Image (cartoon, one colour):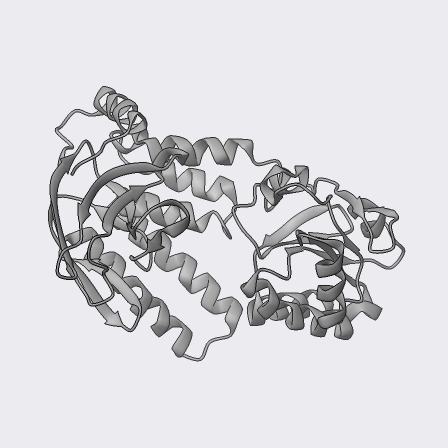
Length: 354
């Protein structure tokens, strides 16, 4: 059973206006695994353009499924077994829906990839190339720069939907201006892609980014007072400040909190400060987080009873998830790096403070 939403139809119309060649995708996707539950449905979902679009679906029989159809244009997508609250993401990351025969492969337990077409095979090989960078012994900051160079090279060599997908992910750590310049390098037909328009719109809406001044945040402290980011940045002796967004419910945040505590312990007396913004669901969970991870730096909450995406802080900093962080030079209030974590963040702070 094939389903195409109104959003997909409208996106198709926009694509046709900007295309000079036929971009229609003709695909076949096959998958089989004992974890695929008979009687459930496998879906192709795409979020290109900022909306969920159901591209196709197939009923699972004998722990296998087949989808065969066509779509208006190449697009990044995901496989889900079921939808909404009961949906299970099958593809480990997004894949490219392009013309050809795609097979669901299982390179490791619980990890599924789609292989068999040029863009997907290249996309599946990127983790290996990134792992080689990590394994060659260079410092974490140099690894991050090498990763950025690899992404830029793939973008410039391919200039297709895979390039667009990589640039979307790269906006987490690359300045928006750099991402926009790489978007400009993609061909004219790609400029009309719904995902391209959505990514450009998000860049245009960004109030904060590397090279720009911070936007102030005011929230409640654990003691019930109010405190602003600007107040902490202006404190005597503050040289650099890490604005950190996190929560106890966020597993990657919990992994990062001990690293932040170690940095604060080492450099606080020399002018390094942290300003934590919590998205915990209750005051009790927030206090538990602070006590569990020994957070001795200023902490605020933007207000309970609202989803994180509804808060001004989330939207001012164009967050797409947490953990997220922004390193600020207190001398001029400008953001000098974003979303560094672990050893890469430690090396950056060491370079600034030592």
